[in-house]
Image (tube, rainbow, N blue to C red; front, side, top):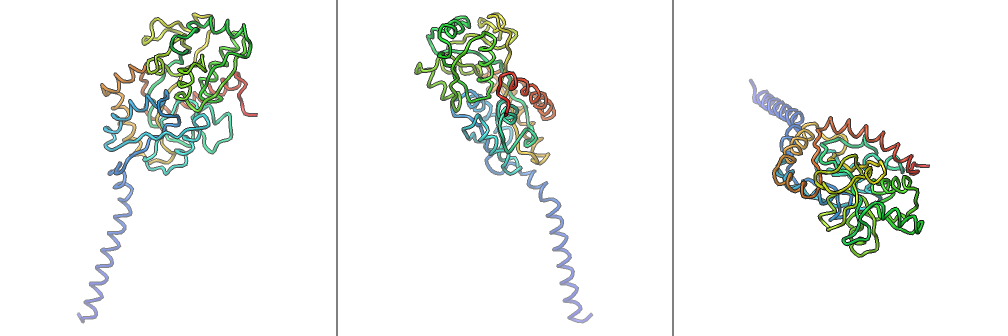
Length: 327
């Protein structure tokens, strides 16, 4: 073989080896990337202010969840528009598992039916359902309102003057109070806030006297529980009457779930789902959520997907009955 032919053979062999290496790298790239997940911090967006009901529960969950995922997970509060600003941010984030949404019912299934948004439930990949808690009607510490009757009587005595707070139009804290007002035949003044942390400041200052939301706010801020929007009493509040006992058959609950952007790799979703399940079995999380009166209600990806589909239909009825449907 001539020197020229030998050089050609070497060049051809090296080039072929390089091509094979490139093809192997391309084929294994996504797998390798997923195998290393996470190799940087994972952001969990909470679309409500720090110190609010959803934020408090998310922080109890987050530490154990991060350990199970195998990396650092950071809570990021993205506030505004009844939770839809934070939800929009996650829906439009890269589908790589590094941006997740920890959210209650509102931004996921209520608000997309009330306003024009760039997302709906199909924009997300469900990861797991975390908690589900009946809504509690509450008032400030040492409030004059300790029963549903005292609230209804005050609203009847001064129509349209008694103010109740919400975490935004169309949220469950809003819809539940609309339901109570309609059932009792009274009118009250709706005062929306950015989130329950802001409502807590108003309640502790005495400017707001009535609010309904997740039960973890009661022990956190030493509030007065008035009644629970449920068919039976809560084991965490055995002395707290139900709305049905007060004469109004009203049931509302707020659940929290974890979601990723649509298109997130299957391997990443499976890892997140397993981490969620393990975190909710962690003793510190179980104890922490119990102290917050937040019942754990784990559902896997398939279970949460079916649940959200049902909730979307239920929310449509709630919105229409409350007169909050999009015009």
